[in-house]
Image (cartoon, rainbow, N blue to C red; front, side):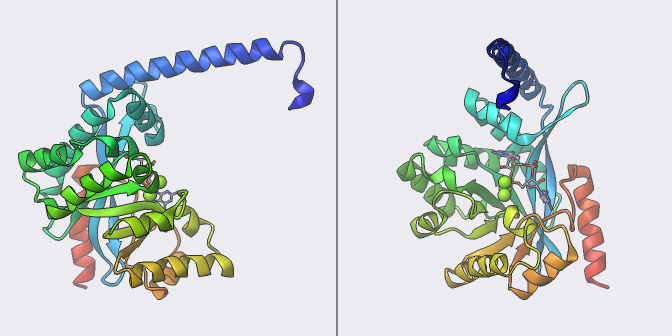
Length: 279
Ligand code: C2E
Ligand code: MG
Ligand code: MG
Ligand code: MG
């Protein structure tokens, strides 16, 4: 690095900064148009009840393919939507679509939906969600919202009010990416979650590492003793699944079961699941 820094380094840096700023501005206006045109769609990744092996829910994951056919990663466009305030409109559009899609599933199959940390500062969030649910006919108990640990840090008092309002109506609350935030345990003490989702980084790096297994075991034990359901994200191999089953994890999610798919494919995924379960 340091060796390549000639006298032109500063100018090269400026040029690359300008390039970044320009690219970001282009992406932002493309995103605005995409939201207007409803070109961002929810896809659905199955959540599997590990004891029965059956689908118990789908997580909605936003997908955007731009005009040139390039897939823009969710963390990129969600990040821009958060910074620019477009997230509320995007969220409401995606949730409305997801509610309609979820009506095609069996009653016990829940819809999991991610809520951004910035949305947890919006005092109207719970009522916005109720409005979308009732406009689209999805009963609140069929919805589960996923928030990350960071979502509770910005304004814990407002966040607690929002979560209580949702909870009282029967919406389930999951703590996403558990174990990667600054204060995972503090968040568990602070709020009564229905579910914790162990971050996929713990599952991915888990091989025959004894320490890693102990950490996963401890997280699952924590869930059990607090009476909170546990989900493991990022299950890709049968071996990981076998261990998680043995350790008593409740729900699994990962490429082993299926990637996020368009709404049209969820019904046949459920039918195949039923057929497998009934032998
Ligand atoms: P997340 O909520 O933790 O979602 C799980 C991510 O892990 C998804 O990435 C999913 O495709 C990926 N994943 C699932 N199984 C596996 C696996 O077996 N292996 C690997 N390597 N990855 C797996 P995706 O769809 O790229 O989304 C990334 C993040 O973007 C999400 O993380 C969530 O934080 C955010 N996001 C996506 N859609 C939305 C949305 O509609 N609203 C908000 N606020 N955030 C969203
Ligand atoms: Mg999630
Ligand atoms: Mg996650
Ligand atoms: Mg994540």
